[in-house]
Length: 196
Image (cartoon, rainbow, N blue to C red):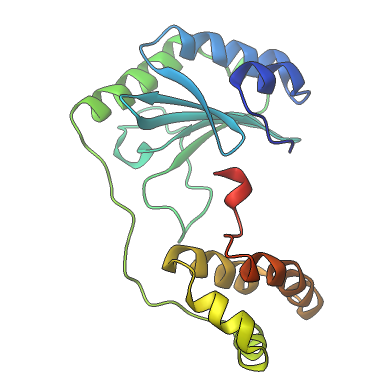
């Protein structure tokens, strides 16, 4: 997915589900949320707090409620797309223009805004032990410059790299990922810095 700098650029260049995401945008713009771009996609905020994101992919498009776990979800449309990784984020995936129910979407968004106004949120789990996969540990031990650069990264960035290797199923994939990571680690960059 191409990284965009403004909401208008995202909506003008996005080719997946174009009519559908523009319909969702119209609903979101009719609220008190502020439209921004975060991680290369539209994000709608209230007083600087992320409330809902919007995105389109090949097989679906949808909304991402940043504190979705706190929503009542009376219609049962929300899912946790990253079990074990996200505590609060919930997705509402759609696969047809018929999935857009403006009054239901507005009700969910209004509830999410009310949560933001009340200051309710689920904080991410912090200070969990970092698990360095064997493949990455070997590279760090074999290359002191990389090891020093890795140690100097913030813990969250170290975790991004470690998780990226752990998530790969096959040894060749792990190796390709390590090769991709090394220049970024040496440059003091995070794996996902280009999306921040």
